[in-house]
Length: 92
Length: 271
Image (cartoon, rainbow over all chains, first blue to last red; front, side, top):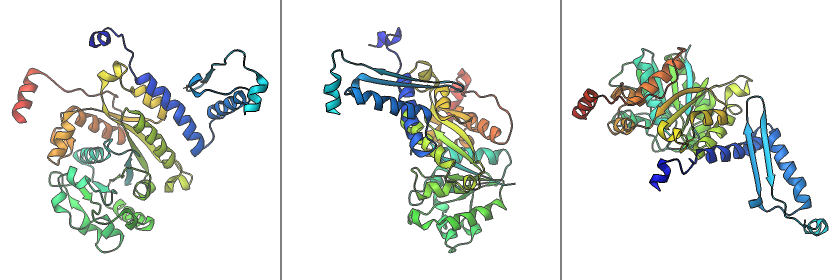
């Protein structure tokens, strides 16, 4: 284990911390102050998708990258093949 | 013109009191007249960190309520004649603080000192909101750790909306002080880096205080770290931060322990 770490076999946990914070704070800032565009987009995109399929929280990855001039919102949703639209519509 | 600074963080245990004592002492060491006020009513500790715990007679609540006059409650530091402490009450609770009372006390202090440092309690309740209420500038103490960064973000939001300045449409100038930073762990990707924190909080950096044994050593003996060992890495970080507060431009570095052979020998003998 130590040897693996020594040779860079395990990545640090800081990038995970950074990403979790960025997503969480986008959400909380939206609630406290001016609504955040990235957060509105995130909520509406997930809202639209969930109208058509049941979203499994584990199969949805949302990433936000905030830059000075440009920010990026990446929504990665795993959609199972052969989902019956009517069935899922009935479910929601 | 006196400046009112609040040292705040939201989260507890990140180093607000340690930083208030160190920054206050560093300002006084540079010749400024300084008063540090403990707003943590019921859980005061600034007196202890500054080694004045046995000299407290009257406190902030007594002054707010008119039981004592301001000069009776102010405690002069034994090492620096231009450093003063206004302690919090240990027996009352935070509801004894009133907005009007705090405004009056800070107004009085502004006529006597160059710098008024308000040590905020943790949390976002009355003590914390009153500590920041009349601040001109804020120092947000943050550890490179997710819960501390999140709480700092919340506090930044409050500084922009709940302070007297914000309500007048003015800004409270904000400074980020990152404490307990371990450059080696950050370099290995095990700890949020300075850039990560700055990007997330979008607040100008005032200083980086490295994780250091000197901080505990100083609080153990009740002496601000800048006074106890001015040459230590955290003390140099606080002194640099204070120079920046005073308007000097000082290169941003993470001070490291000086570990020459002579230094080690001397330090061992001194400890």
